[in-house]
Image (cartoon, rainbow, N blue to C red; front, side):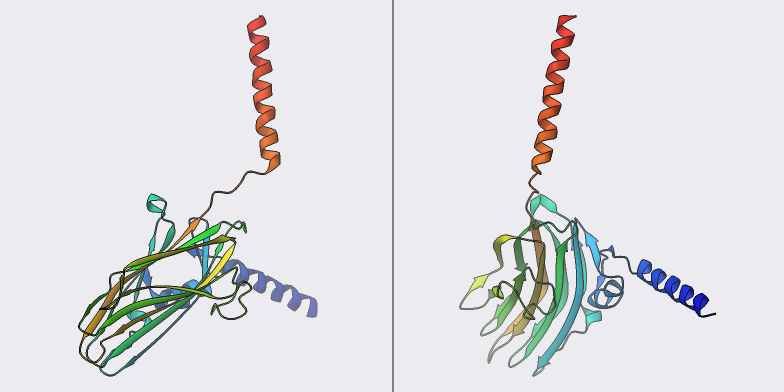
Length: 240
């Protein structure tokens, strides 16, 4: 009886592991990613595995904290070599003396475990009036394995941002680093109306570029052997 129970438990465990295979990255809401995608072990697109999604929101004044169901996520294909990533769409808005913030965190890793991730890009469509500030600040950890990125970052946590305000307008930004096989990110999306203004953000784009893998020496050897073989075959053909 004990043996039968052990076999049944092992079967159920294996079945559970098999059902947790990563899925294709869907178009949906942040809640779909923090629940369904996380349960599946992440989602895969363009040779990258995205996982460990977390989302938090807050607000002050008359600002509204957008729930995970109120923020849409759409996968972006590797168009024009800009890399695969996400477009995050939500109605972040604030007026005078109001602030609205949303924080999205996740990990991205190469599916072949090669250190090909080299570039991280960020852009948005923030607007402001008066003293308003629209800002997306992104912490990232090259080589990071755990979300949030600050939890044991082996290479040290880094930051870059986009912003539009009276003091600065930077709608897109990017950073490069030595190739890694994993990366954790945490983006804080914030609109602050200040004392006499307003700010909005309705679209944020995050993209990741990979370097082309370098062929192994054995691949060059096989290629060279193939050329030699073709030369010998041509020589033999000309003799006949």
